[in-house]
Length: 240
Image 1 (cartoon, rainbow, N blue to C red):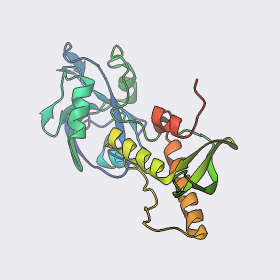
Image 2 (image 1 turned 30 degrees about the vertical axis):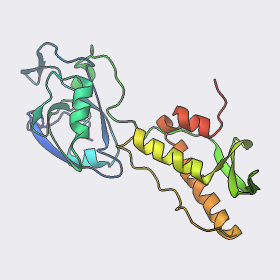
Image 3 (image 1 turned 120 degrees about the vertical axis):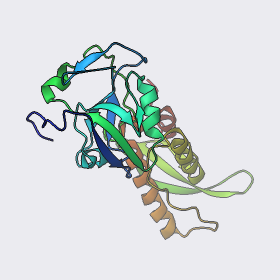
């Protein structure tokens, strides 16, 4: 990302094409919450308020497509986004599928700091999968149990900061995984170890324990996921 002023071509409306990857589109936007607004000058031209690129993933798909911090989003896949609300522009982007084509106007870093200063801050266009968390979660052990009805099952013991908080069965991990995928359809999640229809050996159970621990640690390393109420309940985090 250059520190100097952008070139003249970039200061005019131009297209960028972004290929979606496991990182999504690799950028966030911010801007006005409500639709409408008054005309404002950008690079000497008048435009309705536009959402702008507020964050870019380093070496991510947005950067590869040519996006710059502060870029004003003029069109999304040929649809004008001038004067639209934040959520309206987000919806246009999310419906893009694997290929996103934006018409944008680039500004200098100095201009990016001063334009649209009255726009109320909003949440990122998609959950910020790059803001990290450091929850000390682990699954150091498992145990084989039997229900009152004589059903044998395995439970995995979850620890926070070295202290056991709860135990969960594989089917509970599976239910959490499916729920998170429904809540955050735009996010690519790590895969759970597969379900086996027959009894696992101790060695296989140990492999599953390690895989579940890795899966849970990956989920909890993303801040917005670690703060999800369902995840918090699942790991037995103390209520505040």
